[in-house]
Length: 87
Image (cartoon, rainbow, N blue to C red; front, side, top):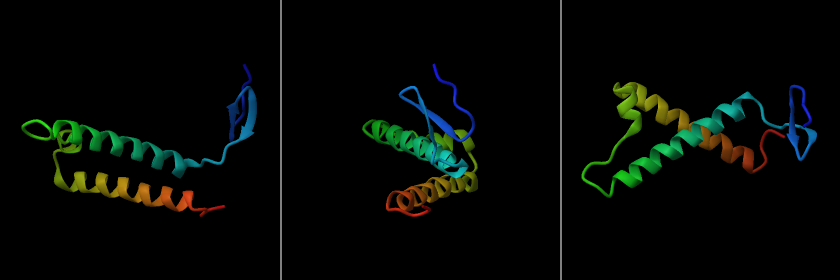
């Protein structure tokens, strides 16, 4: 197994330069979390009351709004990255 140094990722036993930075990593995790929250809302929406994981964890409306804002900004950032920004 090949070990790669900082800024490089292992792909098929070779080290290649990674194009992801810290903002990409945080945005990716926020999008994953946001997708899971929407999935839980969608699944539980078929039953009596939809379950909102964000409001269950934070319980303070302003914190919920901040989380939703960060997820939305992450989506906009990734859309910009996909169409060719930040080369």
